[in-house]
Image (cartoon, helix red, strand yellow):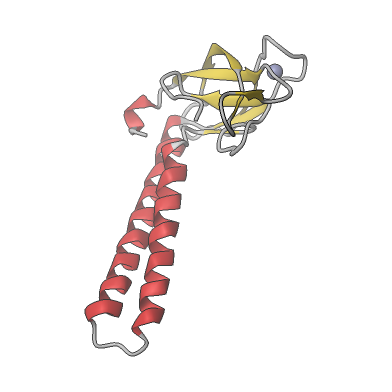
Length: 157
Ligand SMILES: [Zn+2]
């Protein structure tokens, strides 16, 4: 995500899953419905310790708790992840090129390692895409957890 969307007072959408069982949505597809509410959460000042925000869920009486990081801390983590992901991706592409055209023995080893590094780099960049300085339930969850926490313009999937 662009770091400009990270604000001192962050607008987030806390979602609660409405159905216990997935409903049928066509052949071999199951859908889950969420109801979401906007919240304004004030981040800690830069340099202050992490803030614990209890998400005020309007649906259930089991609100999730999130660790909230300052704007500077969030941008720092994003920069580290994007740099690490980008470097890993480039190293992977370099290893693939070396395995194909380079003067190395066992080219398949280099190509295989390079493909793995490319996937790892893309995965780290993908994780950074969903990070906005909140840690807790439903941030990176695959599947359909009870609670999801998203930026307002982000879709559920
Ligand atoms: Zn809830």
